[in-house]
Image 1: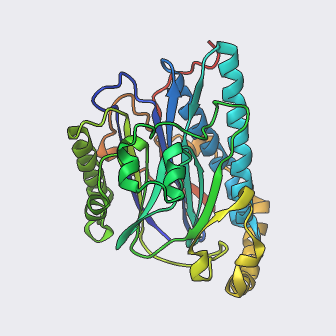
Image 2: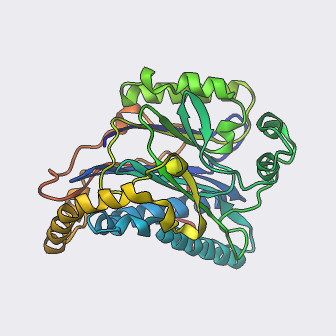
Length: 367
């Protein structure tokens, strides 16, 4: 499976700093591309919100580069993704809490992260950034961990009422604010023709569902530059309507649909589901998943042996050709979206081909 992807982040019309961070990192494997998309909305005093969101982004990106490659070619390896993410979130929470106590400040970040691979997506959520699927209608794939979000889920408020509710910024969960954090996890099947949109709350407050469907219709987006134009236009519209927060969006469009070597979601019930404690319910994988696993077992075993003999890692000399973008203010130019392929899949079964990391924090951890 291949993907179109784009992104934009804007400081907005009022804030002095952009506390949002994002990542788009993609690798080419023997079974198609694997892509990690993330949005984090930091909160805290001067520069500290930026640091919180940056630390979360960097922790997940490090996992993508160092740990994910070994899972892709091991039988059942993808079942380790969400438990790993739970561990990362707990670790980042502990680091930020410790730093906050040391500095006598309060800081934290939201998180919306999606991993796309083998016809499936895996997602983690903390706070009120969002993940959407747009296909004929807009589907919110994540649940807001906020006061109004819970009231919407309980049927006490409508989505429209929640957008303008004075309590909309009161979070029930965030990373770094308290000693405990309770992320939510999801997984589901990538839908043909869908657009996947991750965004901070500064993005989703203003647009209607109809606008998002119109501007992010995948049939109208044929390349990354066009994708960027659509995101830019929507953000400019949001700013004109008076949004005062930082505004960030990351978009992903799958270019083809395959079951692949991941663990397929085989029934309509499994097309999108919340996963308890980062671990999938084995009973819900279905007989089709077992059949697919059997069909690919030999191929996976061969690939696993290849990985064992070759040691899957990104060589420092090779990664120097992959650009890492850091947005100091506002957005990032179009020509920084595509990064050259490092090597053929036959030479290295995990080749970083896109490495976009937009953060706005200096290294303040040692101050």
